[in-house]
Image (tube, rainbow, N blue to C red; front, side, top):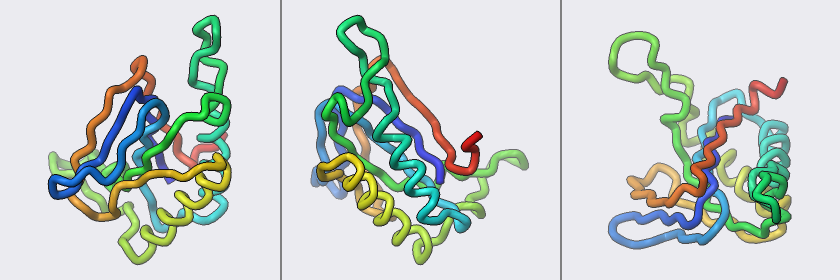
Length: 150
């Protein structure tokens, strides 16, 4: 499981002209899933995200977590995070999990994140053509891959 976490001042997701998710300060999380991902990846990644200290304290030092900050979250499925680009100019998405595997893992990830954070998580729509808007705060962008824990 791979995520791109963007600390945002605000973010939203629009599908077919209708805004389906909107937050103020918090995280916009792009989530990519592969066939080998399991509940163990979900648990580890959710814990890492909730406790990641990338919000400023009173001295402007990144010392507060999402839990401390009480920030909101939008999770957007993003199979292109697993693009293979070594050969040619057309990315291959062969590593990205197909919907029958990815959708249950995506839902489980959102559920786990809600549980760990103790508040509802907003989402896009799996497989939809989404328009994602954000104002990146910092900018702070962090990439985490559950297969590279060390």
